Amino acid sequence: MHYVFTYIRKAIQNSASGSIQDNINIEYLTGLRFKIPLKAYQDKIVAVLSALDKKIELNIRINAELEAMAKTLYDYWFVQFDFPDANCKPYKTSGGKMVYNHALKREIPEGWSDKTLSQIANITMGQSPEGSSYNEEGVGTIFYQGSTDFGWLFPTTRQYTTAPSRMAKKGDILLSVRAPVGDMNIANTDCCIGRGLAALNSKTGSDGFLFYVMKYFKQIFDRRNSEGTTFGSITKNDLHSLTLAYPTADLLKKYDDVVTNYNKMIFERSLENREIISLRDWLLPMLMNGQVIVK
Picture 1: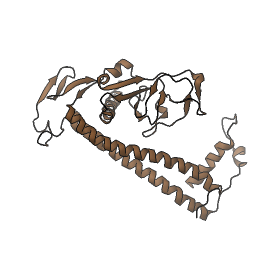
Picture 2 (picture 1 turned 120 degrees about the vertical axis):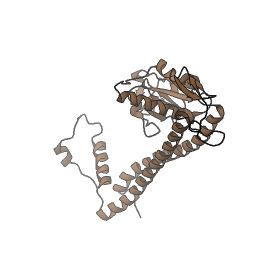
Picture 3 (picture 1 turned 90 degrees about the vertical axis):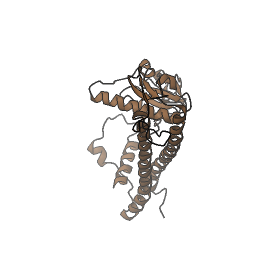
Picture 4 (picture 1 turned 135 degrees about the horizontal axis):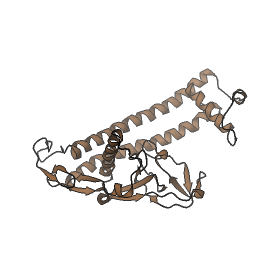
C-alpha cells in the first residue's frame, strides 16, 4: 500500500497545484477520483519499485560503512596519533616521540606542525543574491542557500538565481556556517552559495583529508553544543582560525590515497542513487496509470 498512497499523495498535490487553499478538507478528498490497478497488478508494480528501493538502501549502507572507515582511520591516525610508524606499529602507543606544541596546547608527533584552516584550504564564504533574482524555473545559476538544501552527500536543487554572487566549484565541500554548524555536502556542479554556507577546497589537492578534518571539527561543534555552548553560526574569522595538528607530507599522501578510493566509491553510489530515485519517482505514476506496463 505504500506505493499506492505515495501515488495518491502525488496525485492530490498535482490536482491542488495552483490552488490558493492552505489545506484540503474532507469534501475535497472524498471528491477525488483515481485510477487504481487490480491487486494482482499492484503486486507486480511493487516488485519493480521495491527492487529499486532495496538497491537504494544497499548503496546507502555501503556508503555509510565506507565513510565510517575513513573517519575511523582519521581519528586513529590524526587524533590519537597511532598512524603506522617505520615498523608498521601504532606510532604513539609504541612510544613514538611526542613534542609539546604551544599553539595547540598539547603534544603532537615529532615532525608535525600546527596549521590554521585558512592555511590548508581555500575558503569562500557565501553571500545571498537579491531575493528578486531567485526562481525555480531553472533560469540562471543553481543556488544553495543553506543546509536545508543538503542531501546525504549532494544537495538538492530547488532554486536558481540570475544574479549569482559567491560561487562554489564542482567538488568543493559545502559547509553549513549556520545552525546546524558543520553539516556538509559536496557540490556536484558549479553553484552559487548563500550566506548559510561556505565552500572549501584543499590548497594541496588533499580534499579527502580536508573532508575528514571538517568532520572532526563538526564533532567539536556538536560536543560544545551539548555542553551548552551553542554554535548558532560561525564567522569568517572563526572558520579561518580553526587550528589542527598537521601531519608530514608522506603520511598525508598515504591517508589521501586510501580515502580517495573510498570517496570515489561513495560518490559513484550516491550519483547512482540519485538516478534510481529519479527513475522510481518517474515510474510510479506511469505504472499506476498504465502508461508503462510490467510484463
